[in-house]
Length: 290
Image 1 (cartoon, rainbow, N blue to C red):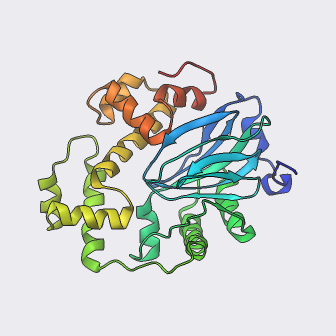
Image 2 (image 1 turned 180 degrees about the vertical axis):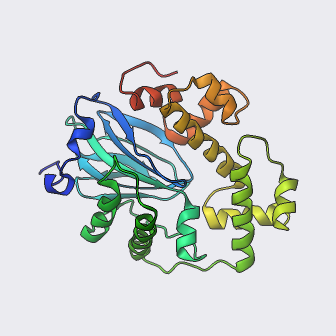
Image 3 (image 1 turned 90 degrees about the vertical axis):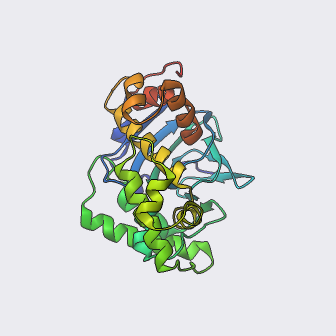
């Protein structure tokens, strides 16, 4: 069985990792709310972790193995991986040939805006075989070195939501207008204040709901809690700072963490590796994880 995706589908993309380290991560320039990467690994890559974005990607080479929803999963070249926000998973290469894949990370807020307030689609299998779905993903994951045009992103997200809803197997449940408004207000407030502690009373004042009702509505909308949403936005900022080559100790403070050890613990819980290891992969050298 071939463990490579048809080269015609990814013509010209090989140059992005030419001469790069055997283990590497390449990030694309992306708008707020989405992130595209290419990753190459041998062996186990990520420990069990969870983040509050959708992870939707295509395996390009090798066999991608991961644990998800209590079962082992395997993705072959051309197959699509769909991981729901806040679900534990790990990942790595299933054969000695190594692994190459491209992944799109999408904040649920972008998807909910597109869905018009319906609940997020849940694709239970984790691995999907669908040529049309794959073509949609490749339209965004193909030109990794290019910034995506705003109008393209709008159309891409619309098609992506249609594919996810189709594979979810059941219609999305609509959220009430009150719940959606409160969740959106809390989301925007947390995003605007991500580098400082935010108290429950502030969100109550912004949304007009008590903290427990808000927590229920927020989780229904974004599949995570307000606290975890805030932590993940800090970590996303930290990853951008790592890519820019800033020192980890400085990143920890500027991204809103109490100290470097707190930053390292949260980073590993969210991404399955330490920030030092992530930095070594992004910058193309092998180093001992911090």
